[in-house]
Length: 388
Ligand code: MG
Image (tube, rainbow, N blue to C red; front, top):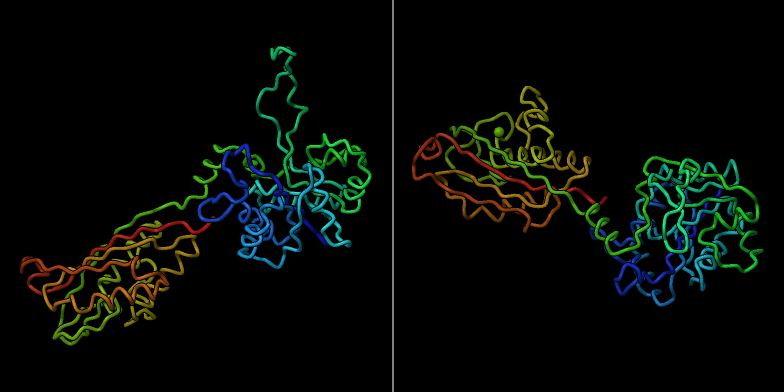
């Protein structure tokens, strides 16, 4: 079964008051258009997309589309018509002739999810049409010519419909071809219903959030939804200084007459950092992830463990925003090694060195660090949620 989708973005977005097409509005670093197209492509259910745009926007739309997650799915970018209906028709005509199911979707609905897409496609395959819809939750009043409410409408028999709307391709194309020219049609379901009879309404979890972004307020609300969420964590660790061990701090092998004792390489600074990162994600601590009763971690490089922590976090949708480590060490002097330390961490986490801070301090010979019995480290890490 071949599935195509016409995405309509031919409007000017005047109601959003932006002065440019609202499809280009950035939501957490990605335009509304890209978020919508990426959601459609990411469903894995759509084989090609035809994008309908305002010809004035062509250059910038093409630039945006070059940055899509799966640019190959985009078959055509075509100019819109004088009305919403004509624009949808232009998009449908640009799909391959052997398309079985065609969806029409508004570019201004970036909250479309895979379940919605799946359900409208399944319904169109079974019934010829599948249009995503929601029960009406507000009370609806009929008004007279003065605007006075004169009747309460039974909302149990009402549904509000959105896009995507899916249809048997040949049928929706016929409905457009034979359309008499009355352009009161605000959606494709209206055309289908006039030409082929009743339209099958689909439902799906999340449909109530599949809002069309229309006003400036809609844009601000959507921005908040897509803004990265920040989480903070702290870490603290101590290791004993003994003879006959290497001193490794942030992956740097530092010449000294003593080294830190531990099951792994005892890199106290990285241990504090890993605990801060895991703490920010509420994923426990390194003792839980890499128990020192486990022989596979004997003598292991903490840089290697840091990479594993980073992988575990990215699997949960987090990445490091920045971190700050303080190493409390009376001797040796750490200043000459700080840049290497920062670089090691940045390389392991695949981030910029500017995101990593490492500092060292002494305790004026006070306490166990001052008496050179051990070294302690504290870290704070800020994580942000990735993308979605
Ligand atoms: Mg430790």
